[in-house]
Length: 367
Image (cartoon, rainbow, N blue to C red; front, side, top):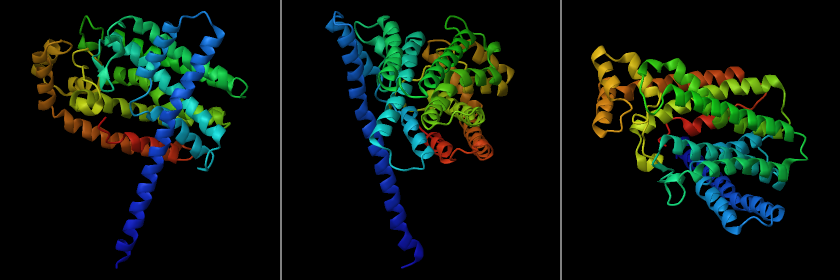
């Protein structure tokens, strides 16, 4: 038997063990949602005993419908990052519970944004099911439901982290991240209002700014920064270096998201892409504007941001003529290489695996 043949099964076994452990961490994380929610609901009913049960049940239903599900990479990254920071040892029961709580705080923040975003964008599906506001009897009540999901974050933290030395830093981090994300949402909405289309407002620079504020801070920096605070890492330089890497990763991720909105399988990505109809300042359109001929530009001006299947088809035909799928693949390769260099340059005292593990989850993803 050759050495490669002898080593093969062992490598395969190691991979299987790693996948099993990852599945266990995910399953444990998913299972932790219910008791954390119950803690919040129990506090509500104890603190406000006159609050009607049907309203408590509505709150519970909204949380259960909107918060679990999806890839949960943001929440799981809190646990994975903290584990790297403490030397990949087994976490204590308290550490595991606390990282799971912080992970759900990120997931609940995500749910808060998405419930509101779906209503603003008039989206149809989210994570393979109808958007919350589309359910019978919900409608614009979803606005208040999104506020309650955000409030649940701070209730969970107050009930469980108030005595921690990093409690104030956690609150400031979450408030600042929420502010940054809402600034990004504002820029997105006023750059591409639903009722008018002006492609002269679109540019790669504007797209990068929207992505930085709307996605990168909360999706990439927040989970890592939370774990760093829990591990006692508060110095400005280390956080600044981590931020630089994670903002680059966030832009990489959002460009992928823009690509999948157009070219992804709705059954796989869990939603029907509507960026063209919704006048989104996405990477595909800004890149197409930089590459197109004057004739193609007229087609884009005449058909982008129209809720008309024929108009959407004409935009996609221009994308096809410009070979946007190849443009994206070229971008993906170059961006990933740039990201790897940045990790080597600025990881500093932080374990490189924090960033490489994150990157591995998103590189060449299909959802």
